[in-house]
Image 1 (cartoon, one colour):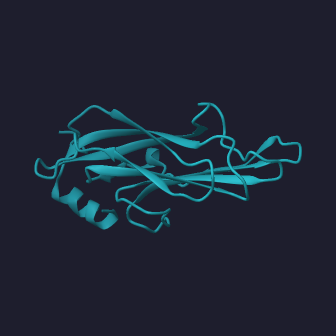
Image 2 (cartoon, rainbow, N blue to C red):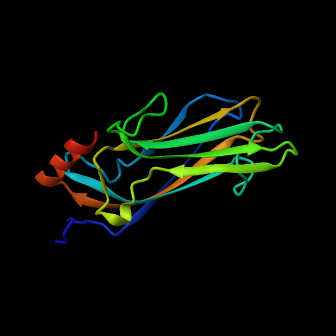
Length: 179
């Protein structure tokens, strides 16, 4: 069998989550992997790539920005292997990836992109990221200097996986890295 004991061709899982237009509430949505991850059947998945996109509920190509001039807003997301109640630090073993988008409104009420960051592991430089849980979690939170976002912020992710057989080496790797 192949080097990684791949049992499937690559497949994609899509998920999204939105947050309230007002500031400070963490929300998360489960991402079901139970169709591929089976502890009794000894199968796990390998995450090969993560694509994340910021938008709003009202416009798939719109950036979430504050509704009032002179204000700033930030939308943060995270993908974890355990349920969370807030954003976690990069040192948390359940964190797979996270990112944020910061936007401000200038005095003319025009949006200005301040920064877009992601701490995604560059999965193209290694052999991917083993996942041994049946559910992952996509979390989001929006923060503002004041007021509300023009529309509810949204994050969409596309995750590329393959299914693999569990081996003792992979079990050790999973126990050392996460979950």
